Image (cartoon, rainbow, N blue to C red; front, side, top):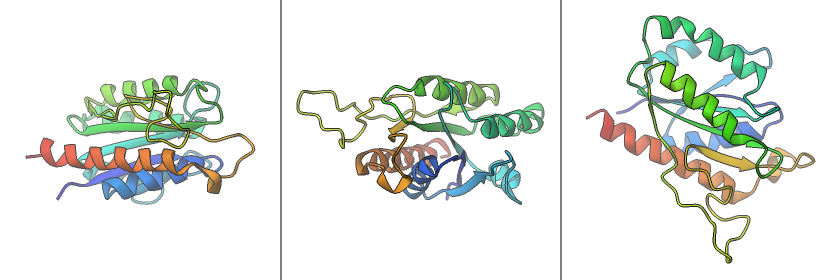
Length: 184
């Protein structure tokens, strides 16, 4: 049985809802980075034991939150010992606008994974990019390198669109499926 961890920071609850959807699809354990940028007790051990690590952060000012950055900087300890080398990695993000520079956040997560010697997993989903596409369709935001969601700045986490959450769930499922294949 593969072990998957979803490590994430959420400022207003939207990224947490995405993390929950990703974890549901992946059968993963959630590791929430707190408001001070710290992992919960046992968080580092969970990541060390994981076959795959899925990372999530809201996109703030074109990158990850400072809390996620604090976690990333602290991951230099497992980096130095190459403890996460050859694990599968994936990432997701949310911002208030359709673009919101979310791709910069996913590139940050990808770079962090590569520095750890990891293997990146993309969405494997076609975008909803036809004239008939609706905002609630799967992968409407159209990302290949990680799951993206858009939540209006004045909308609560409970108002996230089911299509974005289903995209996150299916993304988690893809990571889980590939983890089984990768670990054979």
